[in-house]
Length: 114
Image 1 (cartoon, rainbow, N blue to C red):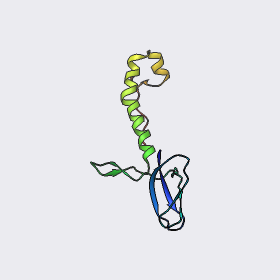
Image 2 (tube, one colour; image 1 turned 135 degrees about the horizontal axis):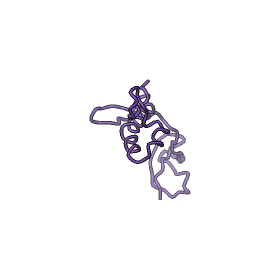
Image 3 (cartoon, rainbow, N blue to C red; image 1 turned 90 degrees about the vertical axis):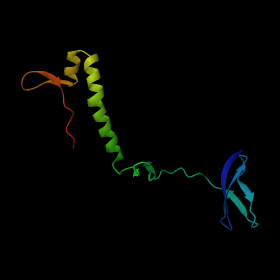
């Protein structure tokens, strides 16, 4: 048995009940018929508190923040690991290592933040 929400057609009363899956109608106390409601599967804006300690919510540019975090992690964690793992030629091809003005081989700086 599953839990479904039923709404009466005449008195508009809503109730949650455990019923068999095939049940779509139930009698109501007012004498009308309660019909099973479909679950709401439409996406909505996330407005819940994400961090209860700082009481912050998801920002409007959340996707941009996540991309910036991934880029920062890539350049601060992944690139140094790649440099230790791969050959110098591969690092130069991927532009993880570059030659500076003095001709020294150095780690490339991440792209400038917009």
